[in-house]
Image (cartoon, rainbow, N blue to C red; front, side, top):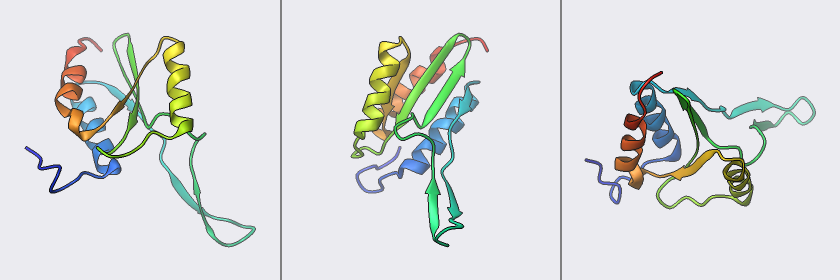
Amino acid sequence: MREDKLDPESEASFQKRVKETAEWFGWMTFSIRQSTIVSAKTGKRVSVVTKAGWPDVVLGKGARVLFREIKTDTGKVSPAQQKWGDLLLRAGCDWDVWRPRDWNEIERTLGAVSGG
């Protein structure tokens, strides 16, 4: 059992754990990786990501698709992330925020869907 108060999990580590667990349960996983490039114009390193706010992880299994924002236990959802989440929910999609403290529920969710 993790001692999250003594050893908080980073967002990157937690996202990796979510994806590995989902794959173990037979889910397809998709996430956009953040890249760093060197700007030809300035010579400085620039971080390149997708459209601001898009969920960190998309999981699919059977007839179910989950859109999940991954946060630490204290991480905050940005306005852009909430805007995407609200849009996905209005469209009937399954969007939520997952945090390390939600691990038992995450495992139940990932283990509950049968079929592939």
